[in-house]
Image 1: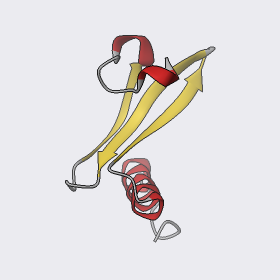
Image 2 (image 1 turned 135 degrees about the vertical axis):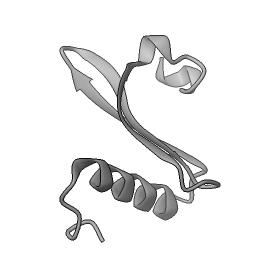
Image 3 (image 1 turned 90 degrees about the vertical axis):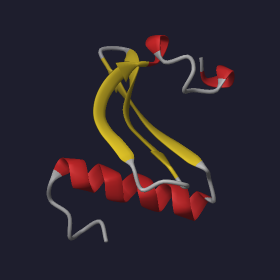
Image 4 (image 1 turned 180 degrees about the vertical axis):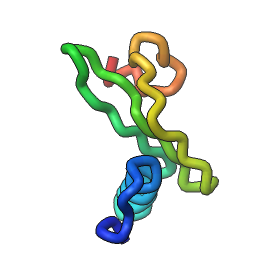
Length: 71
């Protein structure tokens, strides 16, 4: 599934969807480190087909999205 996707948006959606399904999770968030800070680049939910990608939201401004243990 992943090798057939070339567009970054679609690749991240497919990757996150597969990771959520295989982990048996309800939610999944892709964090990337940029300039020493963590940013949310994609997030998805197993109850919905909506996957939001390429957000680049700092984890400092997203306390409602992430568990406290990650902060």
